[in-house]
Length: 116
Length: 114
Image (cartoon, rainbow over all chains, first blue to last red):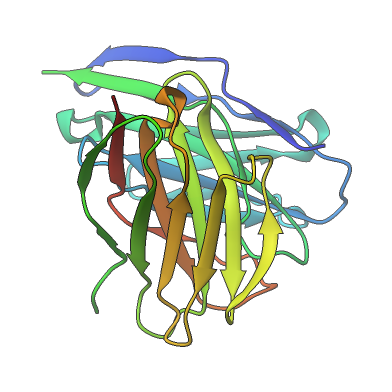
């Protein structure tokens, strides 16, 4: 069975601070995919990144960066110089190989509040 | 390109009634998935449809059902509503099956059962 754990329920930072959101996953598959989504107050989940299990390269996109470590089953997400607009709930998700990302196991989410 | 459209955005129903939610995927997307989001259970997968066929199903009772039409639009039905069915129901569409592409979500339908 797959499982995604986001141990941090809520994080509060002051604008311009860096913040890291943790994600630990469990799966028996050797091929799998990991995702991060952002859910603003409007409700829809916004895709941020997708990573497959064979690609452990870290990725940076503007102020966002992701650290994938297969050895520790972690896929952490860092926001550098946080802004108020980053306030949202962030979800980490895992999907099995051979299935569409439409069937994903989500973590419980981390609510990030960035204060001005 | 229009995003995923879910209707209605808000619904209030009485216990015992049934409800139908609608989802129109992004044009060209053939896969539609449904999720239930509640404060206590988080995001839980309901089912996934591809080319009018249910491909995957989550652990929900038979009161929850769905279907997909030839134009890829999908509906989700919940019969004999219970108070615990109050939730945000999210629909997601994906382009190609089997490639684990990202899912694009709608804004959801917030269902309140009283």
